Length: 356
Ligand SMILES: Cc1cc2nc3c(=O)[nH]c(=O)nc-3n(C[C@H](O)[C@H](O)[C@H](O)COP(=O)(O)OP(=O)(O)OC[C@H]3O[C@@H](n4cnc5c(N)ncnc54)[C@H](O)[C@@H]3O)c2cc1C
Image 1 (tube, rainbow, N blue to C red):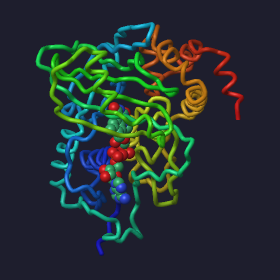
Image 2: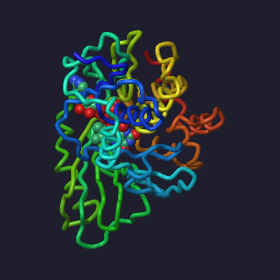
Image 3: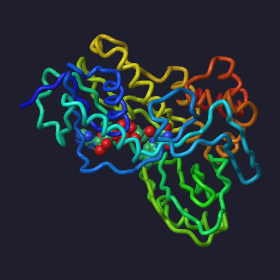
Image 4: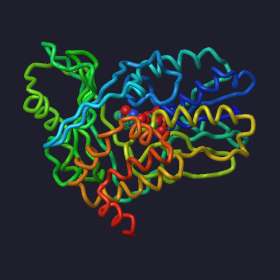
């Protein structure tokens, strides 16, 4: 059986980002890498969006960049400028193609369908397959989206609709998210923050149809693409060991309060690449502890006061957009953190801070 210096388990966003980062920085010229990935073919399956607070390797996979985003509740509507940190969407289809074309050129990189085909005894493992404990009370962000093309120009393609809470909440937190790629083309997602096992929220098709027809007033459209997924709003429990580092979602790269993960994965990949020669001894890369602490309280508020959340999210974004973007992207300083904390309804947050 073949032996490798490094084995990446899971060739998704984190696995491929890491392999690409190692490859373009010439870390695989005399080292062997195996990527274990069960899928038969790579095709577009996700749209990764984020505020561009750092440089990344995938500018040529960006589907669109926006300088405005909006928030809506049943009482309020606001368009917010984000010139300093534009909002971007990476097309996963282009991302997979770019990386796989590059990796194929290096004979030291091999793909396998199953780990049993390898001898991993002497390899260093990067694992991106998370293990979730079956805890019924955990919160998930779960969503279904469709990309539609309309007959007439309909969308304001300069403004992302980040959260539209003006929809039924069913005692959870629910919003629609719209990425207008062109005036007649947009990805529209129905998004729930709730327990994953709540099947009564999963009539996604009807929710989107109703939103498109009745809230947006669009009658004629064709569906060109769809995506569905769920992001844990808690950290997975994975095996830890001397010769293993968990990466991506499995490695705690998700910001629990927002689900944003993509740029954290890019930063984790860069960190690993910089330390690859000494990987067995370096500190594990983590989302900063202050964000984990603040997100934990935020999620307790979300779980126990879902009706307050549209207003809380709205308040968070009003004022300095740079502060909140930096906060949600792990780039804020203490003054900026305080500016966000002071906007929150104090008693609820204090109560949840002390709740066991
Ligand atoms: C639909 C969707 C949209 C998202 N949108 C955003 C966004 O807009 N912005 C953002 O920041 N984050 C977003 N996320 C969150 C996060 O960025 C993604 O989930 C991202 O793909 C996480 O990367 P990953 O490598 O950890 O997981 P994945 O990309 O899911 O990769 C895991 C890989 O492991 C493979 N695998 C599964 N089982 C095994 C096994 N037993 N052995 C080996 N391999 C296995 C899978 O086939 C997959 O390729 C989104 C998530 C989803 C699901």
